[in-house]
Length: 278
Image (cartoon, rainbow, N blue to C red; front, top):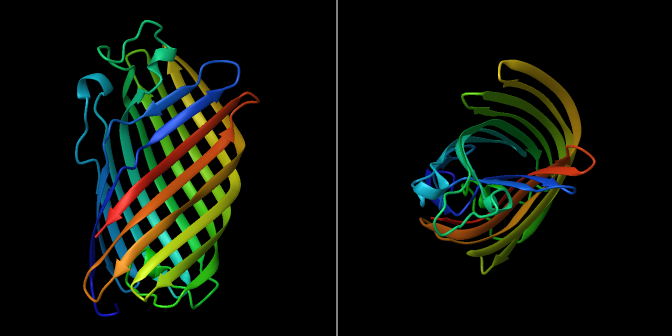
């Protein structure tokens, strides 16, 4: 579609969760209060932009308020793809509140809330498409229409910065995380009668996470710096239909990263969701 501006709406049931798995104690599962995310995207030739947010939330009295916004830029430069992303999420609740409050009743009692728990993320990826006959644009920015089946090995360099902060009257905590990973992925696009496509993909990445944190508890300040081995697994399955003017489809996506904070504690950040686009 070299002469067309692509305007797209995405609706997904993507949730944001963070968990601390403790082999010797109680796991901590944090969730945001949202039903789905809504995105608007614009793409033209080699450049694209999208904006996403929570359109609403449910059960505010029991799960609190959550806010989310995301800005994403995409640049296709030959066989190179560069992405730049900024996102902000605020307001979590403990999904497994019953593990911390023995007489808790999910029908009547509110969850344990962390309304001031906030995460800000700046992320970038740099990818290279080895096979020139495979169009990554056809399943990401949709500015190209692939009509013959093809696939490609796509290595990706991932670099992220995330800040997590939490404030109460007695306790203030802030942690900075710096992630550097190198991933190996493979994408394939099965074309059916030129208009239909089915495109699975899988990427595994390994790298390092460096953290520095500062906590002020009852006017007593403590600092900590650590580094961890980071593993990331992401992928999905995309299906869609192309015409001269209208494109629509369905994506299933997952993105999971995890590291061992201690010998008995595993920290993970997971996303798995369905997305409809038009």
